[in-house]
Length: 116
Image (cartoon, rainbow, N blue to C red; front, side):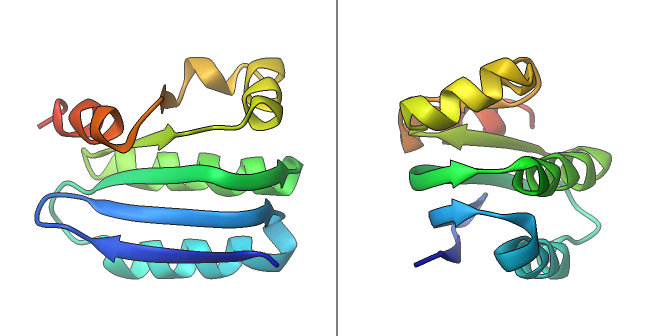
């Protein structure tokens, strides 16, 4: 089953994605919920993709849209706990050079908050 949740901490938001990230299925809902939380201030998002089994091109588009919206507000986004399959897709598409990809939540939080 594909699902996601968004939690808010004092200084950042945590997006957890479970299952597949297919833009047509859950991408729109993710974009709508994150966009609703974007304010005038910097926005920092860490994305737990440990339980993401698969991502297609539309799912990559969702991540790129999030990156663009967040960086346009002066914030940042970091992915963490990527599976080998998802890492491979990010490397093939060269998106591993654009996104911060960390091993742990703590590292991802430090990565995005280092932009303050």
